[in-house]
Amino acid sequence: MFSIILVTILLVLVDHFTKFLATTYLAPLGSVTLIPGVMDLRYVLNDGVAFGMFAGGNATTILLIVTGVVIAAFAAYLFVKRPQKRLERISMILILSGGLGNFIDRLLNKAVVDFFATTFMDFPVFNVADCFVTIGVVLLIVSVFQDEMKEKKITNEQKSSNEQA
Image 1 (cartoon, helix red, strand yellow):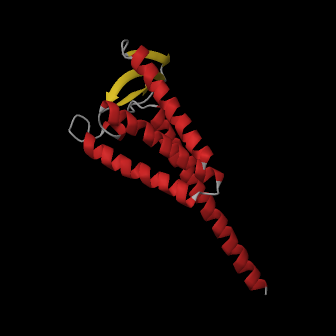
Image 2: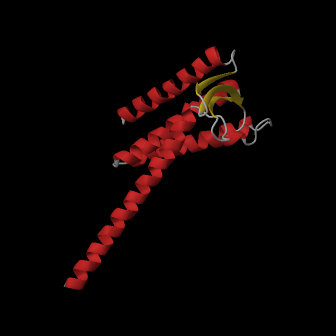
Image 3: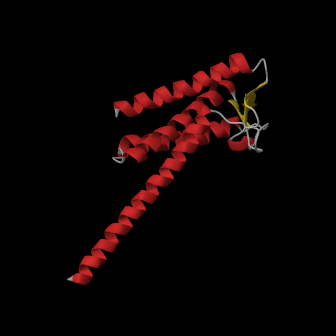
């Protein structure tokens, strides 16, 4: 339990440290090429949600409430269910950390600091917290599929042993 809290706090601190660096050093420049033809560092304040949806409106309060509820649900799941599978636990910690990182940003600044900009394709600018959430969701999907495959294997083995009896 303590390790979940510690890792979550550390990941939120990593996210906010990168946002601090972007605000301090990148904002005055606007944009810097990180990997030519692949990725730039571009300072953007996003007052919307994923991919800039609902940006520019007065949706901040609604976004804070919805995000807060989702974060609380993930935290409750982690602390009440206490997932035993390592992959599920890691995925939930990543999602929780990324959500918290952006929630804190939105709460304090009414916008989220984004700074990774792909140049090889048209894709919204994103940040470390977004990476945590995305990786966490992918790992959660993998974890669910692993459970399904394991359950299917057990069911098939049971059928097979019943047929042999």
